[in-house]
Image 1 (tube, rainbow, N blue to C red):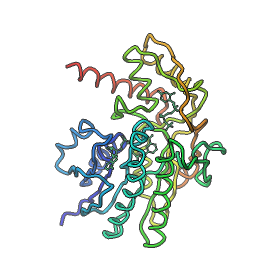
Image 2 (image 1 turned 60 degrees about the horizontal axis):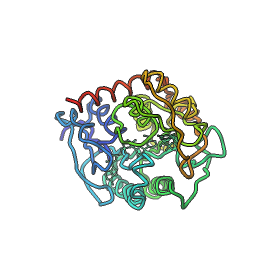
Image 3 (image 1 turned 45 degrees about the vertical axis):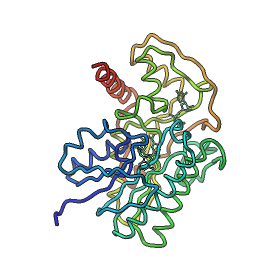
Image 4 (image 1 turned 90 degrees about the horizontal axis):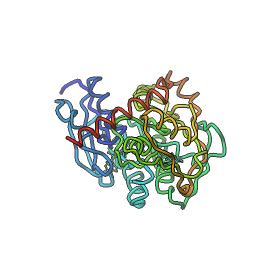
Length: 318
Ligand code: NAD
Ligand code: UDP
């Protein structure tokens, strides 16, 4: 048997998953990407498909699966409100049944598991910034609940499997992340604003734009995920991964207009139900345990992301 590490990435054809797969290949791992292409894209993994250590497993995590691996990164789940609310029952099943199937596989193989949770477990937070010790303020039956409560239940399952069966478990809570490989129709704010600006359309700000988010560039996030997987056995997290620089949505819109040079304006639209007012990670734990903190400032990350969407638009014209 070869000595190379075999790694499974569920949701590997998605935005974060595709970057993670590329990074794992660069480290010398054999990478199995499991995806049902609900929000992922073949374009994201087109280059990786040519790699001899990359394999695609077309599968839905709601159904059980098996393969031979040493490590599992569980990312399968739509992350944009537009997509996770399109079929909310499926979203809950993807989070809950998906993580059960991942954890059962890890148990059978004695494999290490990293699960990607989310800042949404804090809901509309009453504590600011949010440390991992905060239990959150989540509506259990609103439009966002399929995602928030699905992810909360997935965390519960991770920690119960770890306590009950001694799994080598890692949980990260990811805050708003952006960068190349987001879908143009992803629906999240960064891709929406960039696409709108590049097309010369109005930028749709929901509410008055005073709500805040903290945006992490994808390369920084991937470093944090890899760092977490490498922490010593017995450290499970959860650990917040995100950029603590906080911006209002209006500030983001203004930056995108400036950096694209777009000749356009802002159009105000109704604020969706249960939209969190503010969000910023407390990353003290990540700094201490992973020696990690984001390096890429919003302006630099936006310039790279704008260049990606410009190139994509050019490709589509050809
Ligand atoms: P994404 O939608 O781009 O990627 C999700 C991937 O999972 C896609 O390739 C999709 O096809 C796949 N998938 C969805 N349902 C599936 C199913 N039932 N079976 C198999 N594959 C399935 O989202 P992303 O931004 O890359 O997010 C990846 C993970 O990180 C998600 O679990 C998300 O909850 C978490 N996360 C992301 C962010 C962020 O800002 N991007 C923030 C917090 C948490
Ligand atoms: N948002 C916006 N215009 C858009 C898309 C989103 O003003 O075209 C707002 C949205 O209401 C929220 C913030 O931007 O307050 C972040 O939204 P996103 O869907 O990116 O992430 P999440 O709400 O899950 O943090």
